[in-house]
Image 1 (cartoon, each protein chain N blue to C red):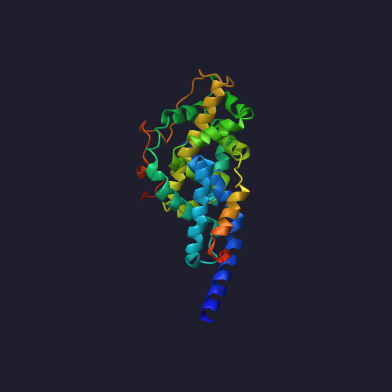
Image 2: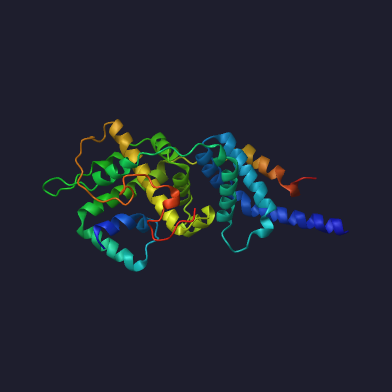
Length: 76
Length: 227
């Protein structure tokens, strides 16, 4: 796997969507190419930051009540 | 007698549906909130999603992914109700994608890699993360939400959005690159990063032609885009 290919598939690697045989060649490339390793590290950190720091919105209780009371089997 | 039996069947369906569907209120609401960007519209969107899901519950195939099914209904509802009112997505700074992509692979003359970017992320504020996400064009925002916050696979996202897997991959790629560019921009604004770092060239598939591609031309990842 060359640098260009790495730049195309690194998200697939994070997302566990890369084929098994490609995973290994991806990892091998990173151990030999500090530039790609650096790039992939940053991209990975961005995603981890997003997942960790993006506060999830919690549905208000009133919405749950509204949904439940609107369902036909709850009426009458 | 007949009416009674029908009522009882309806009742059973209702309880069944509730048990299956209610655990996803928060997940749907979070995504709805990020797409509509306000609480009132998000509540209406989720409410309508549940009513439609109930109505079409007979069409759900047991054993398939119920959460993905709910998200698909919400996506269609969102498109029908909200997208029409919205203006065209803002032209994002695609030039920035290339810039950030290049800056991370920069080396100095001795081949030493500079790595200020990864460290700044420790300092980034929660608000900046939300802002970066909220500023993504809707087509990119939704795939990032589904992949990174809801943990759907590419195949599931393709089913929810009714686009080819290749389109999911290319939108996810662009969306995440834009997010990264925005975060790096905030870092520069706060002075965590210097703006004058001289990047070396590395080809970026995103902006090879220097222009943002429209979703209709999301063909980089081998599969033809249908929509």
